[in-house]
Length: 208
Image: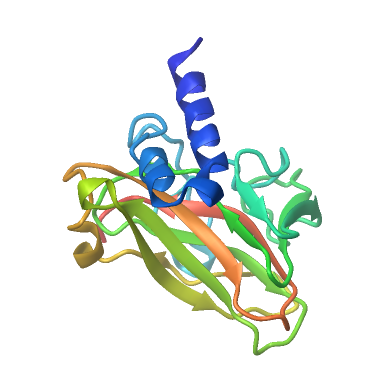
């Protein structure tokens, strides 16, 4: 079996155990780096908003192939309706719905420890007071898992790019590697008043 495929399958099965096995399973998942850091194709999807940094797509982050290999809970689902800017491709047609009580976690991506940044497109057709929590899960010392709250997003009834959401150097000093690390991202509506969708999740691994 191809090494990359085998690593991907191991990561998926580790993620599937996440909810029932707790922090030990999370540590096992995050110790698996999916491919080589720096090998991912990069683009500038946010250039029209003045952000000329290079980003790569989080695995499955366009949702064009369905939810796989993301982990979805409590009603999160992939459906029709792409973000309106078509940052990835003009042929894209899907996005991820996050109703009240749901949650979605990306597969781990391999990135440098130097202030990795995630950015995506968000839409909220519910109450404007609703917020979407964005968290990073990354390896800590002694096989532990650190969870950092990156931000609480607001959203409107039209698609908009999120602000840049990144870990700090202080966060990442607790990681297992000084060269690269695995980071997964979790998205959770914070209340029952929002109707959230997310799409085209990008990661910028480089130091600012």
